[in-house]
Length: 450
View (spheres, rainbow, N blue to C red):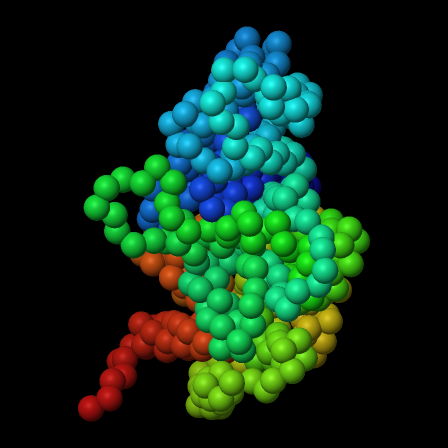
């Protein structure tokens, strides 16, 4: 009798390493340099992934562990790295993220940084914020959210409530962040958006090389986050008790509203309704018109999409919002796969898409090899997610809709918009056109408009 071999190892994880998310969060703070406390290879890997996706130079420092450092500890390497970064870059802040190696040997980075504050040969010591990010405890999304919390906890202060709100976006594209800022400006709201990497990893061309790109959330704005009238945080699957928004609520009594990422009409409506309540003014007419055009396009293209099946994969928050959106347009996400493991994904999908939740198979702690094996039997019409499933799409001869992170094999990943009526419209058009193109390619005679 033939038995199927059971694998207990990951072959091609549906996630990236935790320090990568930390580096992206640190890149969203003004004049900040990320530094990985560990081996040089970790920094090289993350630089490669971020540069390939954003098509921008990304500097990430390293404490460059050697064999001796791995045995005796990395304090001196960390001190040397902090000094070199300070002298060469003159940053306002250095963000230190640990790696598997430094965590495994037990380096006490927070204690090291207290010691470093007393170094006598330093002409200037920038702000130092550290975060624990061993890759064996989570995903890049965990690294991102944990780092945002550590930044806010280290810098934010309280005070008398002032008329502005905090916005904590998910791990979205620079185009999404610019869109959020435009929406808030349209409502006339003052805000602090943290982190803001919309310019630091997707900026204009330079005449001369900039050691630290312009842009990012200003540190003096983060300081006042504890005095905001409210916080809006885009996450529904991350541990709600461990977010930056919850930290502000507990420590400074700032009310926090944790929303799903606004993709699709239902979830974008919730976001705009909250903004209306916060600022006590109706939705601006141009956003109302965007919603109307999006709804009209749903009607126009329904015949192309109804009953199609998709496999969607990526970060959990992204999957929840995509499930809501896909259910609106008649596509059934037969598999929602993520590299995270929280046990919350199925319930969240049921909350936002109850009509189709029974048809959605959820796979946490996913591996792309597992996804490929399941795809062969599920026979989806589409794959939706990062470029890492390209081989699966090619083997199945079905379209791959590239969204999320990372996208290495196409140009313009930093400018893909996902959020709001505007981002949803762009996603919708891409999905419809991919289906039409697949139908044309598979037809014996093809069709065209004469």
